[in-house]
Image (tube, rainbow, N blue to C red; front, side, top):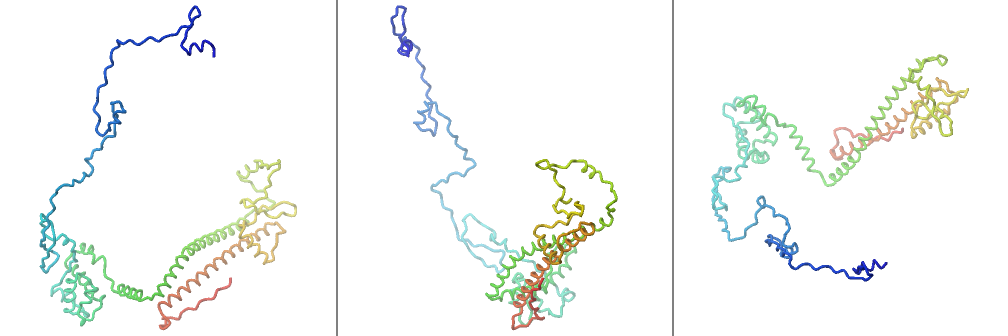
Length: 429
């Protein structure tokens, strides 16, 4: 460092005669005006003394307290008088025997009726007079005594027909279905006598009629279901599991069948259309007037590949890449071969080999047309063979399921109503 830098650091200045003098800082005057002390502020609620001291007594804004008006108040645990309870008697309007029971209730509660009596809903039962019975309700299978007993039991047990059939007099020899059919028939006829036609059509008895035959069948089926053994239940579960695995495959095969039939239909239409167009096409020597699109395409230059050579137009018009064999003069015919997918091409070649048909040596329109029709027929034949195999498999599966169900319904000790069909052998395709 230079001498001037050292003097500057030591706070020395050079005088005119070359001597160095020390520069002294003047002292601050003692007669300065005293600083007024800061006004003392009160420490906010919720702030500790240390935090208030760190802020210099100014204080900072703390998180405001939320208003507790919408919140649940704190439970006050104090000397609260216990609620008085009394053993009181109550009346139940749902009972008709007039019995009076008691239970514990608060001393200030004075209910007029039992609180659960409102849930005692009963179906209204319409009764008949003597004149109405003689006019409308006489039946050869039901006597007046049996009908009166039925109506009394229905009123007593609130249409619980299983209990009614159990309590019905055995001397009348009536089944549960006969009891239900008799009751609902009487109720519908009574409603028709006392109600207007519009109101009667809206009543549940008119909208939902009791079907006696269906109820008998339902109970018989339920009885058979209830009498199954453990082995039969396990076998049924196994069959249902197989059915769940078969149904998606069946639905998928049905969709494939529809697609295959649609392809066959489109192929048949295309073959017929192609034959008609070939019959109406002009001779080979005749000059045909090109369409505007073809004229424009003929003017456009062909694209070039890498190296400057032009790309050959040997592919067919449909873009399948299948070209017809050359003529004797080295040119190709304009009639393309029918395109076939890679998987089906091997099968088509195999069928053509079985027919002793090799590669085409001629490229005339008649030969190519016949060759295309043959390939189209081979494709249709292969699709039909595939569909036939699937249908045969479904037929055998359904036949085995039918035999199993017949075995469950009619055990070997009980012969079936008709001869059991035998399992068909697998047909050869």
